[in-house]
Length: 369
Image (cartoon, rainbow, N blue to C red; front, side, top):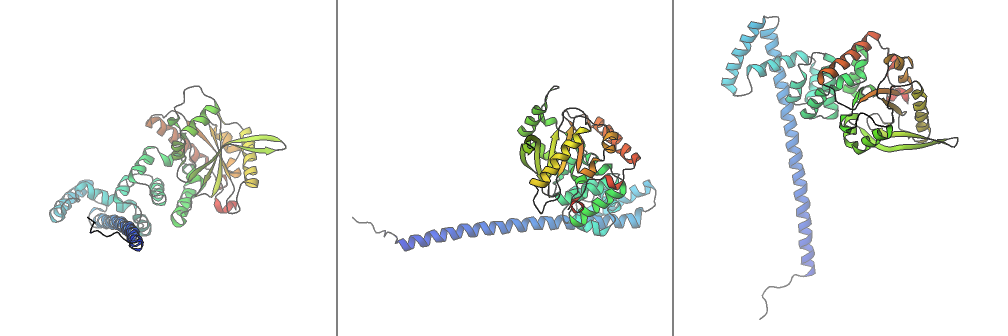
């Protein structure tokens, strides 16, 4: 007995296949549109909330708390919290109102606020506003915006004292302000914003006694963690990069490229304290890279000499910044937060007292072209 079901023609099969492909593509496109719209709505809501909280805080500060006693301010916040909570529900506690007042006090420039609110959530701002140093606040706010840090990443950077470890923090306040303004207005990072001192390499798992090759092997083994410690924008290019001059071979320990700086970055690893002869060695590497590896659109290569220790007076006397060289210590064991804080605070105080001049800053993208 023959079946009543008729077999489909080749044309019908092709039509069904085409319909399936169209359906799959359509679903993918619609899913993408919905996801993108949801994300943009979430960003818009965050931005609107931050603007609202700033306006609320600004109004309270100007109309009720300005130049008043602390006890009076506390009573005002208590009264306002009770009224607003009764009217609008959760989110208007005394603590949150205090956050809003502090927010308005610390970010008083509406233009800067508008730019930051487009990228930072209210949770970001709450982690920043109680930092006492205004330059430090501005640094974290601009880095959050430029590198799109999550609140978790921001907290990690705060815990790791990123600002105090940047080369930028050792500069005079005027230079810090200039570089942060460049980051804000042009999204332009400088080497002083990128390079750190010290670098914390506790994840390498090195014992008390090791050789340079052990250090290099450990870095390559934990390359992902090393890139995170270097910071955003670094890409690994080569290990033991061979260069040849007059039939003599030289080797660059590690070679990276930094997208934001648009430069090659050579890293030389040293076990002991920094020595003056390391400068000439790195200058040789950088000049060779400039001549043979640098592309026309790239800025001049930079170098990082990572040492177990350094004498600051010696480093400054050699004016390494003029050669595009940054010397930094590395720590293979994570010190306590208190000890690290003391070490960085001492370094910052010494740098400020020496009144480092602008000519010692590492060359930026435009100056080096």
